[in-house]
Image 1 (cartoon, rainbow, N blue to C red):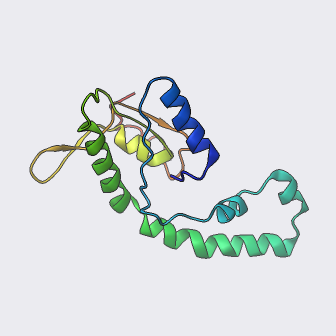
Image 2 (cartoon, one colour; image 1 turned 60 degrees about the horizontal axis):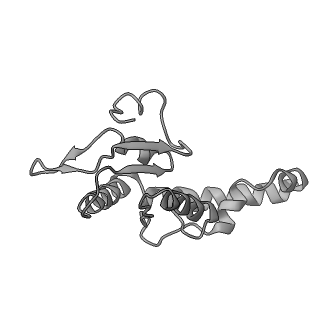
Length: 150
């Protein structure tokens, strides 16, 4: 999640104004896709309409060479343990009653399955409620069937 994105800050600020603590974890450990790249993936409609064949091909090539390696580096097996650790740390803050996840797609849904068990049988991760703002990389209905939280 990028703090640089205005909407991320606005969401956090609005929750804080409503009396909630809002934390934004660095689940990608500083390895963020450049904002310019993200804007090139889905440019404004006006820009898409004006783009020529060469520009479209260049954009597709950039996405094809940039996104797959980044997704592999930040796959579920890596990111989920970071998110679980973050949720556990937040639960340890005195006065914390409930923890929710409002994040992109699959990880909010995975955390809504409830806590997992680590090797010693202790609960790790899991939230009390979740919102998947852009459910990318999600399989419907399979990824939603194990959800146990609102």
